[in-house]
Image (cartoon, rainbow, N blue to C red; front, side):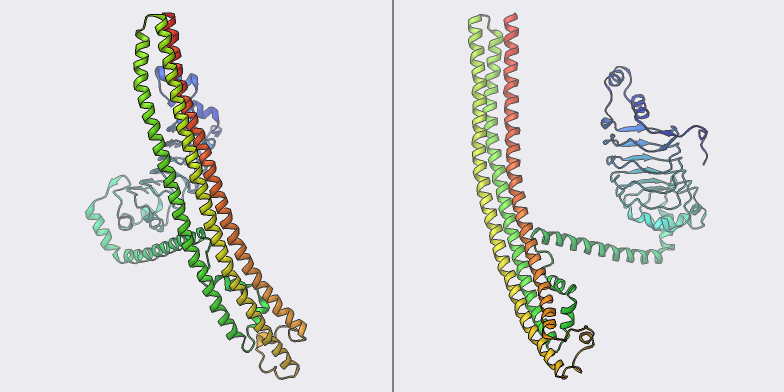
Length: 526
């Protein structure tokens, strides 16, 4: 794919090139002259044309954050890159370049029209993020595998596709295959698709398409199941009780407990372990269910608080608007009277009265704001007490349930130690050799003496207690951190709200006063 200008040096996409292009493509005549004099901000540009520039590499486009249309055709670009910030892009033309692979488009979620005509692309992929894609031009490339067409089935909005000039376009079944597997297409290779041909194509490939749809439905079902599981897990995490609705914690206690798993093979230890697990899991499920209920209570508390805050703000703002409306009605009459007044003494008196009205409005609005601050402060403090109490109660009850888990572990430890020592005694007497499972016999030196047995059982016990302690500490730390951050954010949000409101009041009052001052100056001059 030789270019007429390949003899020229490849160019770098730098600020000078971009400024020149923006200036040339901007408004003309007087508006354009003014824009060029003052400079055009790249972030305000919606369309950019950079064709026939001998550009080798896409770069320096990060400032064009609101760009909708980008034309980069007829260059010598080798890779699709540097487009990450152009998230509002709708139309992209990269035709007549030297691109070998589709890449670098993951953030272009709003792209509807993509042209990669006349490049060196051999595979259609890496377009998954382009969920709004409607027009795709890939003609005159190196695409030879018809399976590339199946990849395009995921783009439900795709209506126009161009693949002429590729090896696959030479296939005898090219048109029928595409019409069958992409039934929503309206245009193929710039030609309108006939409904009759579409029906024939569907009949010809019906068996294969039915199989494909079945596989797609299975994949979609799995994806939906996985998404539902992920959403459920996020809900459980928000309640700080994820993975407590089953044997996960118990299984984790034995995951790294080599000697504990060996000891479980002793006669009587297996039954003991099963009973222990059943009781342990029941407590975990109790923690889980209690956690979900408490999460719902915290959510209700937060929602109620937000509603109270919004009601208070809206009521206060309503009162403020009424005061402003009353003021403005009177203020307009006062300004009119000042303009009509010819006597200096009366003029000064009316200006003073008007200035007094402005000051009174300021005091009224600030008083309303201070009342709102006090009201919200009381509401926030009450919410803070309530949420801290809820979190405290949650922690207290979870710790009580975790203590029951430790009690079960301690009881199991004592019983397992009895079984292990009994096994040791039988081993010493030579009564145990035939009863020992291969897994236990393989533990080197386990039944040498009492200290070794006690240490093995104790090591297993320590691992289990550590797992329980760590899960409890994690839960307590996370819920306390959540509570602290929530309360801090609420206080900070209120401070920012108050600052914005005070700024609004000051700006409004200053505007009214400036308007009066300007009127006063003009009247004195007259």
